[in-house]
Amino acid sequence: MPEPDVRRRRPLLVRLFSGWRGYLVRQWPLLLVLACLIVGLALVVTGHWRRGAMVIGGTIGLAGLLRLLLPEDVVGLLVVRSRWVDVLVTGVAGAAMIVMAVIVPAV
Image (cartoon, rainbow, N blue to C red; front, side):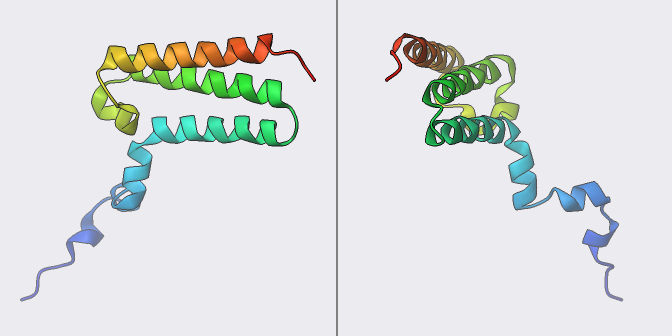
């Protein structure tokens, strides 16, 4: 007697978020950072370079904040080095980007 299909017995949410879709859902911190980065780049391309640079700097800071607050199994691909190195580098880079966006005079 053939065994019933195991996939049909799994709950709907498990079936929806298995495979590559589940991998993307588990990478929500990285996707959030990338979405904010795209918004910042869109602002730069449309001519609002100062606002765009500030959004990009804030996005880099957001990546550091997520790396600081979330555990390693949740933060996913935002893990590069140790937690404190990642937080320090992204914090300094984000702050530097925001400071440069404020200091550079408009042309």
